[in-house]
Image (cartoon, rainbow, N blue to C red; front, side, top):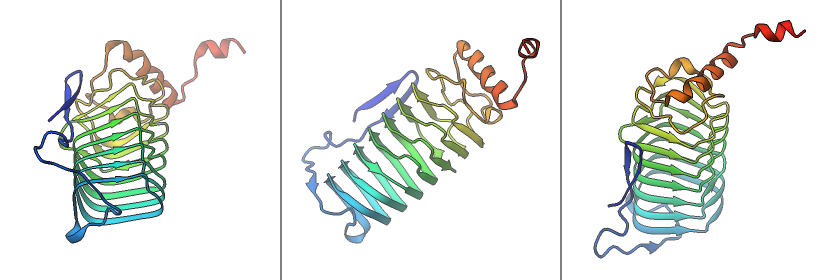
Length: 229
């Protein structure tokens, strides 16, 4: 099983090539018999709607999937790779995701609620304008080179998460637990909700960025600006 490591955080990747005799069969749908789809490849589908509930996706690849509206509920996702997917108007809730990679996916404007993440990698993805509520990282999570502009994390537990080289312009943290979350390698100057980010990990050089973000959040007035008037 391969891993992806950034600094002190390592994520276990899907083991699709590591299991002897595994063959991924092409499937025409993600709705499997008895609510289970295993050892599969689902690719290049363009759907008006995707409604999926009470399903276990295991050992598979989903590539180039595009939807106009997606609603996912009570899913279990184990050892799956999502690549180049565009899930518009995504609403995903009450699910558990483990050993899973999202690579170059568009999840803009998504609503993610009560999802447990364990060994999950988001890489080069767009999650702008999304709302993530009650997201729990029970194992390592890496978010690398992703865009999170104006994304809101509410009541999340991301203590086991690392964000690296991400666009965090107007990203907001609204309550939750983030102790130990690694924010090194990002520009933090436009974060919102800094009061929620107690005991996160940053570089000393980022202290000025957080001070800039706090000043903007408090809407302070600088005396030298007054003097120039």
